[in-house]
Length: 95
Image (tube, rainbow, N blue to C red; front, side, top):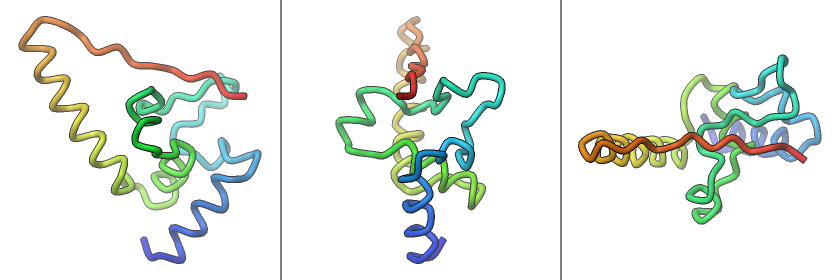
């Protein structure tokens, strides 16, 4: 996606109805965010889950920040599986 396209995705993500344009929006549970990266790890990296979801919906692929986190999560999941522990999925309640 071009720089202009990224700006467009950021503009949509800043709107109040951004969930409707998000790849992880569920009409059956509109009050919940099903973004798999909505946890403290992503907040520490200052990655906006709304922008990432809108970007994914518009382009069909993960944004660079999300792709890096997905790779890290896969690595962590592999380590946890070898240790016999599962990494829980965190679901964030929207405002």
